[in-house]
Length: 87
Image (cartoon, rainbow, N blue to C red):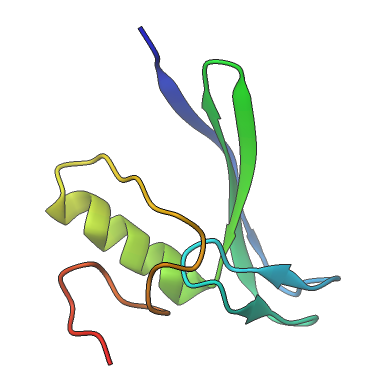
């Protein structure tokens, strides 16, 4: 049986390089703040980086969905949960 873990969560005040937000797929520019954590499932380990508002949207979505989410990078709208109106 597989067990997921989230660890090494941190808030970064200013990015030193360009990243893509894992939630919305938009750029996290140099100098922009972002949230980061590592996710592990069995032998897979992955870093997740998000705009602060996207991590908040992800948390709202997890709460709405009962705690478990499965999404692909960029398939969500910036700062919006799955139940919020999309533009």
